[in-house]
Image: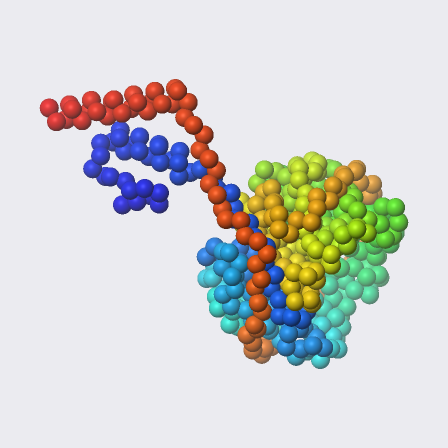
Length: 485
C-alpha cells in the first residue's frame, strides 16, 4: 500500500519501517508554496465579484453580478472554478431586473447557499437566498422583505445547519433604514428576525458566528455616535438580543466594513475613516476585546485614499486585509495588506492597471494562501468592468499584475468609543418562494499569470541526525541477523 508519498513494505521489520516512516515524513511533510494566479472573468459588459470561497474539490466558488443578459439591470452571477481558475460552470440568476449575489458558502453536500437581493420590477429590493446543488441548479429559493428596500450583505453558516444573515431594511424598524439580522434554518425558514437602529440610516455590512453560540455584526450608524456616520459593532446572543453595542468614530464618516472573531475571544474590525478631510480617507483596523473595548486601532495611509473592505485572521495571529488605494499617479488599485497581531505592517501589495481596481472579499484557502475577489476596468479585460480573482500566497507575489508597492504607513487611530441604544424590534417577514431559472453565461476566463506551487527545500540533515539514522540501520540489520539465525 502507499501513504500518499511512497510505498510502505509491510514485510519489513519494525525498526526499518520506523526509519522509512521517519525519512518519508522529513520529505513528504515539507510544506509547499501555494500556487498563485490572477484571472479576469469577462462577458464584455459589466461584471463584478463580491464573494468567494475555496471548495472541497480544490477549486473555488465565486459570487457577484453581471448585466450580460440585461443591459438596463444586472443578475446574480455564480462561477464554479477549478483549482487553477478555469471555469467549470457559470450561471446568472434573475436577469429581468436587478439582482446581486453578495455572499456564497459551500455546504456539506457539495452544494451552495447564496444570499443577496433581487428587484425584478426596479421598485423595491427584497433580500434573496438561493440553495443550489453542486452544479448550480436551484434546490430552493426564497425572498424576504416588505414594501421598502431590504437586502442581505453578509451570510454565514451556523453550527445547527442553518444560516445567519445581515444587511439592512427600510421596510421595518425605527427610522430611515435599520440594520437587519435574520436567523434561518437549513430550508430557509425564519427562526427569528430583528431590526436594530434609531431615527437615522443604520446598516450592517458583516456578520459572523461567535464561539458562545451568538453573533457579532458590524456596519455603521447615523443615529448614534460622535457625529456623521460612526462604525458600529453589536454582540448578539443566540436569539438576536443585543449583549452590547458600541460606536467608534469621530466627527466625520467612519464605517466598519467587515468583522471577524479572533482566537482570544475578541474581534478584529476593518473599515475606513477620514483623516485630513472628508475625501482623504484611510483604511482602518481595530482590535476589540470580548466586550467591544478597543485594544488597539491603526489607520493606514497610502496615496490619496485607502479603503479596507475585508479582513481575515491569519494562522500566525496576524490579519490580512483587502481593499483599494487611490493615488493621482496610478488611479485606484486593489490592495492587500498583511499586519501582525498588533497591527504593524508585515507586507503590502497593490495590483492593477491604470483604471479602477478593488478587492471586496478575501478568504483563506486550505493550502495556507488566500483567494481575493473584486473588479477591474483596466485594459486587462475587453474594456468594460470585469470580475477579478486573485489566488495568492502569504506573502502575496503576483508580479504580472503588481503595479507597485503602495508604501502605506501605519498610524495610531483616534476613534472614540461610545455606546448606542438602538431599538431592537422583531420583524415578521414571511419568506416567499421565487421561481428564477438559472441561465448559462459565456464569460471568458483570461489568465494574466500563473505561478505553480513549489516544494519548500528540505534542510540538509545534521551530522548527529545522520549518525542516529545509521545507528537505527545497524540495529535493524542486527535484528534481522538474529531472526535469520
